[in-house]
Amino acid sequence: MSDIIIFPKIGDGLNRQLEDAMAKSQYEQAYDIINEMERHIELSYEQQLVKLEILKQVGSFIELREESSIMLNQGHPSYEAVVQYFLESLYALEQYQTVIELIDSLRSEELDHALMMQLLPLYDAARLQRKDQTEQSIDQLQHFQEWSVSRQLNYMMELIQSEQTSYGSSVRYLLEQSPLDARVQTLMIEYLLLAGAKGEVRFQKLNQQVVVDLERISHVQESRLLTEVYPVIIDWYDTNAPALSPAVREWLNEQQLIRYPLDFTDSDGTIADINTTAEAHILYLNSLFSLDEQSDFNETTDHLTIIREIETSHTTDIK
Image (cartoon, rainbow, N blue to C red; front, side, top):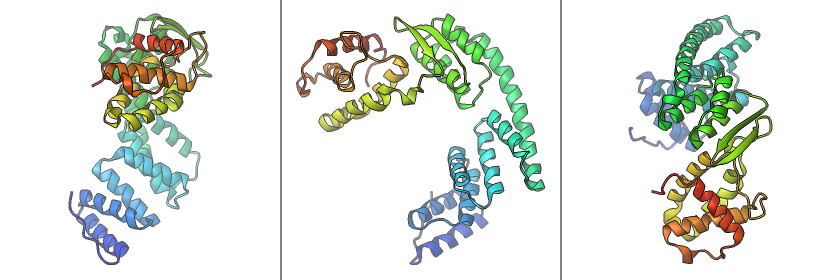
């Protein structure tokens, strides 16, 4: 992307560059300029709208969704314009069901006729795409058990990211009745939570019988291991072996995907405390890295119990 010339009056100078780039449809350059502007000044309401247009033109739809959502929450005065950008970003990200639901809710508001004429074709297109998604998903779910683990993982991620929440019964049945990879099971629980499924789900995972109450369980990103235990482990490596931290982070993320919603128990069968669980992970990882002399805590029976549990889920090597 192009270099940006900084004028003495930074705000005015950059704004002139921005206007020139927009007039010439040079959106990549405009993207650089408006990001530079945000480093120096607070964007005006008009400039915020220009930023949304730039994000749309460069195809940065995740950023467009985030920026327009923030503006709506902050009460941007050009509500209708921002809503349109928000819906267009959702459509581009294939979140068709959300587009349909939001436009349905907007119909009850006193919106400008011209805006509705912009949104209704988007609504119809989203419904058509949603229908195609549904037909494709039905066919794919019927052959789910025949697929490789990699394809199963990718498909569950697609269902979650596109918010296709109509297949709760099928996913629940597969989870309860089929032998599946532990990571696929985790994504299935996430999907059921997204779909608002109720009641209990029972399945085998890592040689354990698991019972999940879908109305009480936290999402994988909110689990105790991810929010309380893993930060302690990462902090230890950041301090004592920083060169290994990236590999440890990657391994922990994979482990969480494998183990969720299981936690670790100590030698008497109760949930192990945060420090003991973290220390057991460090001892285990240090043995893989040949860093046994680095840790300042001794191996206990509780540590060994947790390490044995870690070994049952160690399906990938640290790279």
